[in-house]
Length: 287
Image 1 (cartoon, rainbow, N blue to C red):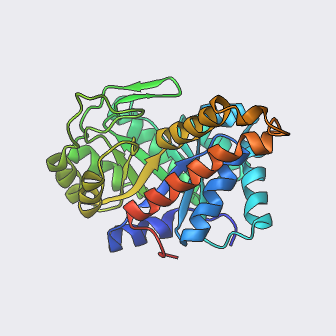
Image 2: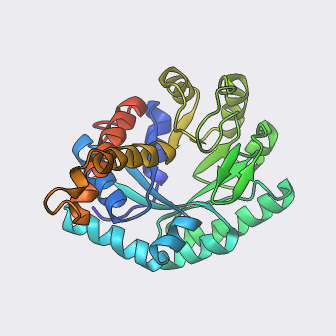
């Protein structure tokens, strides 16, 4: 099928009450594993990179070329969007110019007036290029690539103004955080989610989807969450599997120093995590 934007998959998820998995990737193994897992589950997919991951992998054109090539060579037929996660205004423009089909402008650390103005400007460029746009109101707690948020709840009135611009998806702070959830964390704020969803009237995005209990995930989906971001759980699963392979002594056996063999346990663990998330989000067999 090739790369598509996220417009249609988001509308379908919002209408049918499931969530599209947004999986952050960090290298070739990540991208290949996630694509094949979603293909086997017949799930729509948003492959995402943070600005830090883009820099690590070599640049926007490198990431675009890798993902596009994998889709062709692996004969991936599910709809896949290549998305920039938490991008600055300038980063979003670079991603669009490089072939990304979806971008998130994170203006949540600006005053709302500036956030709204920049989102409106970016939207004109994105629409002309056929690229879907995610914006954010409120801030997501935790830290991602040096961007720190305290987890402020989104203002429903601001959510309404932002979605009135014509964006395709909205990230809104509802008590969620990036990275591992501390023991003191109790729950998403479902009352806030309900109010925001009623005003926004489009699919909402749940950032920090790793570690939220399944019952809360599914309740959030029923209240308007249509895209859920996962990163930390794949990183943890990958690291744990590789650590165990090395600590067991297997890495020293035969030619297991070959990176293809050394990374294999991590890829398998990530595959299991992706499949588990797809089932949890209700996106299996939605293609």
